[in-house]
Length: 453
Image (cartoon, rainbow, N blue to C red; front, side):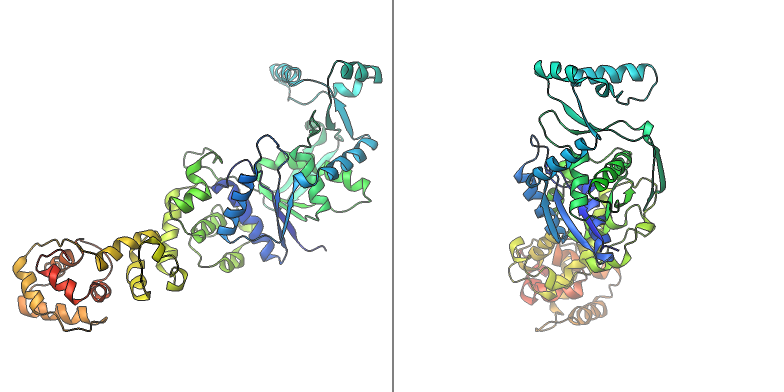
């Protein structure tokens, strides 16, 4: 058997968003689990909408996620291959020219729907004579080209959906080449999959009907090349929002760029969600890509429609940060306004943050002037007189509050809350036994006396 080879084939007409990034994640995990290869292929035959900027953005997004590719291809570099494949299909009588305008095709479609018939192409172009075609071309019409489907069953064992069956006569002959000679997705993708050795096509269930058509195209092209296997297919349900509406690449708030730059999410929070949503596994954070690879199995993907909730991403992000080692963030903290932030600081504050940037608030509390909240000046004065001498460590807080409790008789909330408010200005936060050494003795004394320090 050939080694597993999959491809993620985005159209560079926009940035990656949660919906289409899921296809990249699933293909990458499948390839790694099977010891195969992952190809990034830019399906950029749409010359009007594809841009180099979007292509570069997609590459940036994948690298940020950690989904490095083993091979790379661009359809715009392979136009000669599509021309050659088209000529083989023409010679075999499977690709035929059609001259209807979009308006004429639209009228045919409306008439069929009005008669409660499926809107299938009526193959009128096959009845044209050479003279008819010459006359139409003399009028300035240029043909688009359709694949002549065979009226035979199309059956495959889908890796997610199980056995899928279509009847050839229920499918419409697809347009493969536009009037301007531009190959369409249906055609170029199949040529590439064959010539680049793709063994498995894993994509959204919106492509199921495309697959029925494409299987006949695979078989036609492979037949002209002496045979070969058609790829295996797996179609997973598409993610929707909470209301059941689809996720569009035009929803900028769900683009990976926005989630990275504006929401401050970690790659692993997005990877954990996209690898687990819609599967039999719980949607819980994983610490590494290797863990996600070990868990991955297409058999776990359910048939139900997974609902996306942005709060899940933030929940996963918090889980990831709460166990993230200092080494993973050491280089990022100074750029976020925390020069000199060390491991002790990170370990103290990480249980109380959802995004790394939130650590800056605790850095300011421990290292910048703060106006204390004084609720009981006499109590704080007594506590100040009992402060242990420096140097301070993890046991200092316990020793201090024990002394304050013994001297004042305060306990519980009455003991801890006035101290927390004076030292941090907040009612909640990281454990004070870890915060106190970061605040330091001099600043602690000043705040206990009501000074901004």
